[in-house]
Image (cartoon, rainbow, N blue to C red; front, side, top):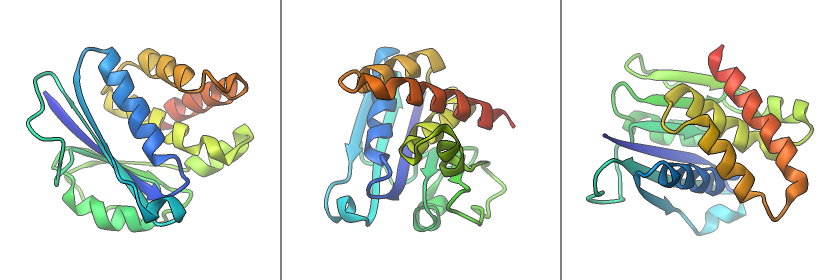
Length: 178
């Protein structure tokens, strides 16, 4: 089993963070993992992306052209990467910022208004955690409990943020079930 996930959006949306958290959760589950972040002008508002490869055997290459799954947090990312997603994968769409779909009937399209949900929770900054948890809930790529533990560990130096992020996980999980 090997799964490749591309996370993409604007710089500042926490794209690299959620890729890192998923990679950590997969490692905790005993999988081989590769996390490849993209650094550069993305950090100033351009498109930011990272890829995570999760496998039950050694990973031949961490570079992927055709991911099994895509988490698109903005329109340009969806337009650029949706055509590259493998058949039967999941395309997650942040419907708060993206008003159109992937135009694919060979994938599972999951549309969640993560920014709106995060605002309702009290902070737009939690949108990435809502997105990650919705994607993990739908894909089952790692157990939700493992994901929660890794999020708590990621925010352990800012413990005041843990309750908000746990609410974001619950909200994302709920949104994926609709």
